[in-house]
Length: 360
Length: 188
Image 1 (cartoon, rainbow over the protein chains, first blue to last red):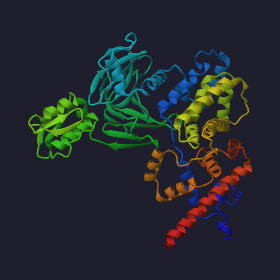
Image 2 (tube, each protein chain N blue to C red):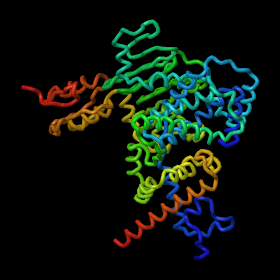
Image 3 (cartoon, chains in turn red, orange):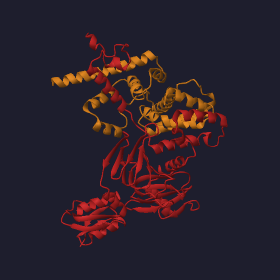
Image 4 (cartoon, one colour):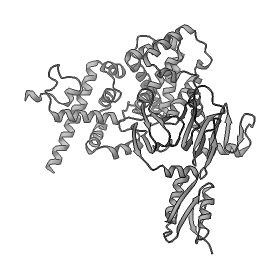
């Protein structure tokens, strides 16, 4: 055999090529070996959701003596020293009593199993214990945290204890402490929100979400973090934010300038920065859209996107109806479309979320 | 994290530091989960087994050996737990149980992969799934979990040389099948 190409992919991958003869293998065999590695690598990349990982640990901690056990201080300090050397700052993220830890733990326990509808059920049911659950609009207060849940087809705007304003889209959840304590202000978001963060240099503001973390330096920005889809992104409107994703082992960090959108692909952990028009996001916050002779079907689709729901137009030809002006989106989706349809032959069926011809 | 770091965490844990185990858990939860899914498509079973595994570690903390390879210890224990359940389930319906090794993963994952993968990778993945279970397991542990042969030999309970041979034969078979299908394509 040609001594130059003596070895094959299997020799290379099982480590059977003697030292000094590493290049006695053809390029095509080397390429095949790489492809095989990639194929094996891609055949098993399942990951636990970060909330699942936290919930599973919670179960482990519960079934062990972890929570009540007292341990002697000396081995603890020794271990701490080892860990600090080994991971630097990473250690602190996992130590128990940081606000971050508490917030993430709370989010894991309270968001993982309940869907927005179920939480709202609690609110409307009024049969639950009212002693430790304080209900005000859609805000549920438990254990030092407020949880805001916005129902489908609705929007919500709230003020946080530090004066920060948050506009939340339909189906979103926000968890924030009743009072911000310590050196940082931290909130947890699932869904979509527009943040106008009040300026406070001494207390940086963090938005934590499933796949990302945003550090804010007094600014306006928009975040979309959806547990179900892989659509996770942030848009900076004003000021500056630092975006990071991944855990402390493979952390990616990026600073954004206004007008930039950063998207993350949760599967591959890739981030992508692009330029976007911020007017749409600002209009979203302000609660209106401007139309210039736009056909009704396009407007309906814009509204659907805006409220994050699907609206069927059931094959109706709506292109004949055109509208200009500013459409106010402060109210529920049903109100908005009914108003829009006033002078048309159509009506909106809220139950089935579709547009129909008016019955004569 | 390096082997030495795992060892340090392990030792700290045995000496009473609970946070060390949490770090090990955080580090290994995903790889263990995906390794577990090679034996069953039941993700709840895998999660239960992971929970069981870590609860056991706390329970038997005092009796754990300090001199272990942490990685292979966790992999081996998880595999044993899952296979025990599967064996029991098979026995209940009077079926013979043979340890499977599923490389294609969940169907959902597969669809996404199929869209993204190039034709060659798709072909390779299909051929991979046709290999004997033991070869698949050795290939997976080597190139997916990125373990060394010593660790693989502990998990698969065979000699170091057997592990290398399993990898060698697996790759050889893959190559031969790929070459055949390639020639066939040129001739067609």
